[in-house]
Image 1 (tube, one colour):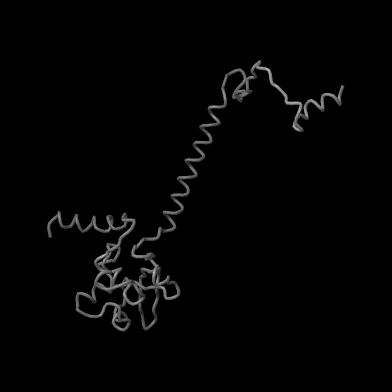
Image 2 (cartoon, one colour):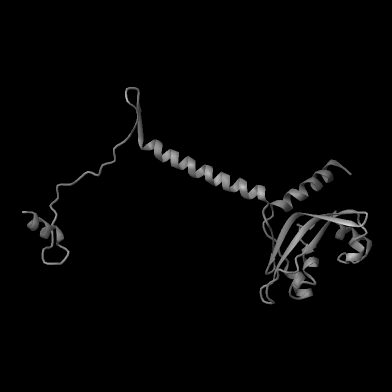
Length: 197
């Protein structure tokens, strides 16, 4: 394998992890609407599907990639599972697919969720990991703090004699005469003036 092929293989996961959404109309034309029975097959066509997972290995052998009995033959593997308790309607399908690292030692299965994907309608969306969520919120907070300090800085002035002082932001008054309507019930200023005299 030459360097160019190695580079393209290394770039593949990065491209698919940056992908925000995927859908395939042709699959639906041939297989009908998405159901619990065919959603994993639909997912296997997406770039989010790991080509090194147990399902892909079973596909290359010509075996049923979704058969639990055949999946149990793998001691360590990546597997995909649809959560059975979360589903939408026939008109608006909604499924949650977990990517799990599965390890079977001495008949005991250990499963660790390594990713989650949502199938909403016909679109497959990856859910963000906790690191991405916290990083995004911290960046947003930093931006808001920077803007706040920027606004505060523009409202202060520094001198060696007095240090930092707030700039007065008094509203300048105009000498334009103000008229008060004394014929309405809202002329409370005029009534108050008569009472205090």
